[in-house]
Length: 245
Ligand code: AP5
Image (tube, rainbow, N blue to C red; front, side, top):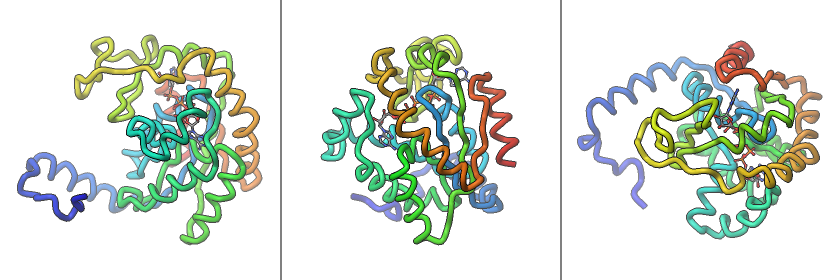
């Protein structure tokens, strides 16, 4: 595999180089932040993540996206994860902890990270703490996307995503400019296999049984900020900015 150092910068358009240079200059002054986004399916974690990522110069590590990429590529990890994901159940702690540990080493995580969809069990939270302790760092804030279950079915069944970028749309709440097409690339949008009312029931069940205790785990550490995730995307963004500023 070619290393990033083998990229010929002469072939990169000047505009892209300048944009990246300006981004790095802006990011140089940003303080480090390590965040966890926690909430049920459809609560808006993936919707708010790009804004947080850009504003605070963090990497966005979404275990669901990573697992879906592994399933699509039919890697050994993907083959193991597929069955649980299709049913709306959680994949094993060992599998997800392994991918997060690896992903955090990326240079884009230098200023910190947004963990979206991880940890989802108290076991994962404990393993994460151990990992971070070895690096001499800790989680700064846990954003709890609190929302009533009854709102989520409409959000989940109306969602369309652009798999390559992770951009998320909604037929009613955030429609693309052209139906079924990504605004930025013009590529087709898809619906996730687990975004059905039936699978949502299992996903919510897993959330209440296995993931809600994770909120208590961090609550005891005094780092949880509760958001009103039923509000409009713009209002939720304002709440996030208030909490993180
Ligand atoms: P994952 O991909 O993490 O799915 P999820 O947690 O179920 O979260 P979603 O992506 O469905 O919701 P979101 O909160 O990001 O919602 P979004 O912003 O898109 O996980 C999938 C599977 O992978 C799991 O079931 C499991 O099998 C496995 N997995 C992943 N991590 C794991 C782990 N750590 N351990 C074990 N297994 C793991 O919003 C939804 C829709 O609503 C969008 O269309 C959006 O446009 C719209 N919307 C968003 N905000 C608003 C708003 N404020 N008002 C109106 N509409 C809104």
